[in-house]
Structure formats: C-alpha cells, structure tokens
Image (tube, rainbow, N blue to C red):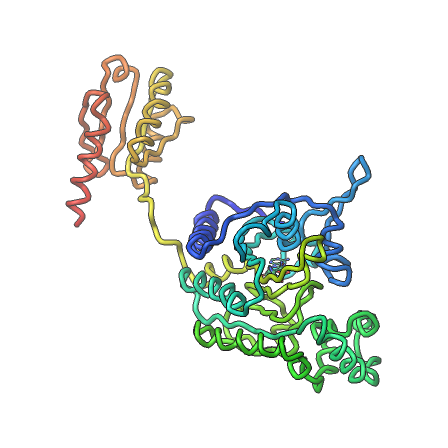
Length: 426
Ligand code: HAM
C-alpha cells in the first residue's frame, strides 16, 4: 500500500480528469459504491475459482458475525448497485464509470499493490459487439489524450456456456498425457476448470501448452460472429491488436470477448508471464443474472491507475499547466496583521489571484527569503503600522522598490501590476 503525496497529485488529478471528461462525453454516469461489501458478493461474482477469491481478499468478520470484504474489484459492486436500484428500467444500455481504491492481498512486486486505484467502465444491457469496441475505444482515447503511444491490445474470445463444454473436453484430451508436466495449481485446474491452465505463469505450464488447440476454433456460431465483429470494429478504431489465443483472464464471470491492454510491443508469452496490463476487461453476459437480476448482457474494463501514472512518469509526461503559479507573497508582522491576513487571503481567493503566505513565521527576513524562493514577483507587507493606517506595502521583488497603498485598493492594484508584468514578458 502506498501514499500519494502532494507532489504526486498533479499527475493523479490529470489522469482522473481525462478519464472523467472522456467518460462523460460518451454518456457514462459516475457511480461510487462502498469500499466494503458482503464477502459473498465477490465469492459469487468474481468467482470461487478465481485467484482473487482464493488468495487475495481482505475479509473481516464484524461483531455481528457478518463477513465483509474490502472490494478487490469494481464489477460485482456495480452490478449489485445496478440490480438494487432498478437500473434495468433505465434506457438500455446503462453506461457507468467509477474510480477508487481496490484491495488485493498480492505478493508485492513491480506494478502490483495491495491497495491500488482503478478507473473502470461498465456498459450493461446489450450484447452488441459495437459496445465491446466502444469500451476499448474509450481507453484508446484516454491514452491518446495523455500522450501515451505504442499501446497494444491483446484480445481473445472465450465463448459462452454453449461453447465451453466442447472446448473443455478438447483441453482435457490435450492435457491428459501432460498433466504430470504442469504445476500443482494446474493439476487442480485440470480437474476443476482446465481453461485456467492456459493462463498459468509457471514456466513448465507455458511449455506444456505449446501445441494446445485454439479456443477460437471451438466457438459456437454466435460467439464466432461476435468476435469477428469486435475485430472489425478494432480495425475501424485503428487500435493495434493481437489475437492472443491463450488469453482467458482470471475472473470467473467472463464470456465471449476478453482483452488486456499493454504499453509497448508486449509478446504473448510476456503478457501471460509478467502480467503488467494497464487495462483489462471483457464481456460478462451472465453476471447480472448470477447476482439476482434479469438475464442481462454486459461488457466493461478497468485500468490500473498506478501503472499508467508510472508510465507517464517514465516518459516524463507532465500535466498541461492550467493554474498559473502564485505570483504574490504575503508577509505579515504582528498579531493584528495576522488577523488581517486571514481576511486578505480570502479576498485574493475570491478575486482568483494566487497568493502564497507563511502565516506561521514572524521574522520579516525569513518571510522575504521564502517569497524569493517561491519566485514571487510581488511581496505584500502588512505590519502593525500598516494595519492601523489602513494601508499595505507592495514590494517589487526584483528591484526591491516599495510602495505603500490604501488597503482596500490592493486587489485592483495588484491585478494592474500583474497585467503590466505579463505584457512586459511578451
Ligand atoms: P483485473 O484484471 O483484475 O480486472 O484488473 C484490472 C486492472 O487493474 C489490471 O489490468 C491492472 O492494470 C490493475 N490491477 C489489478 N491488480 C492490481 C494490483 N495489485 N496493483 C496494481 N494494479 C492492479 C478487473 O478488476 C475487472 N473488474 C475489470 C472489468 C471491468 N471487467 C469487466 N469490467
């Protein structure tokens, strides 16, 4: 778990703003769900067979005997809220986005945190492949806006409940003579859900799957056509893609399309072994029904915000500057001046002029030094005498020229001076 310090905030704010603006443009409404949910929601939703539920959940027992989990992901909570608030009565599809902390008890390593932030999108209510493409397009737009290029998407289809039994049988046949060559977890998976064996990071398992038949050859006609359409839309969007037949994703609810977005030219073997996807997601046509709603198709994805922030840092991408640095510094001397300073600061805020101060300091020397360090163009000096005379001293920092002016004219005076300075600089 990590702190996000003041110096980190501009990048976080920037990324968050870009995500919100683009989501709003595309008609997504923001949703915030509680950080704690009944453990059952994830056991059922994310899936009892998933690594998240088996190994990574922070679950606590309350005094009343309930089990709550710090949410490890956003999709089941959003679906719960969709059902609970009757959103199926809204015009379909319902488009929702969220941003906030998620919690997973992971082994610490690069790009993996135990508390991390996700920005996620969910489109609930339709199964048209154009919506799979729209989710992907939004992330493409976000990456373009924050100037991250060389982004690639790995995409696959894992079919539906109709395709699964056939393919599972094919996998069982394939692994029957190889089951000794795979890791202990995969031996379990062989019995419970052989599809997961394709996703294993273990080197032995990577070798064992070298000649595995592709799931794409075993899709039913509906899933085949759906996937073909998704790829056609990706061509239209112009998003570089790679069909990764081993991509199955580790959460139980996925059906049909699954995808992961990476920075740079990540090879399929790296994709599964290193797992540093910036975004992952897919379609989950069965989850709403599983959690007690009507049979409702849906698609979505989530971005690991730390991973994108780290990439922005690596590439020296800074947020565009909006607010100018404060150019005026307030120096106060004595108790009376301190009281006036509180009022003055608020007047500057209302007037939209940045004003820095150091209210905790008393000596003029140290305050002038701070003003200099802050790069202020003007220092306002307010002492006992000025307060009694209803005046204030304005000091031009560069030349050291000082002028005493009536207190109530300070805002228009400073505005004029700053405008003059701006013209001079041009
Ligand atoms: P996920 O693949 O578990 O999917 O996580 C989505 C993204 O969150 C990952 O691609 C990664 O960028 C980031 N992430 C995951 N775990 C960590 C971690 N420990 N530290 C830092 N970043 C991490 C989901 O959570 C699904 N709910 C996505 C989804 C939405 N599918 C449909 N709708």
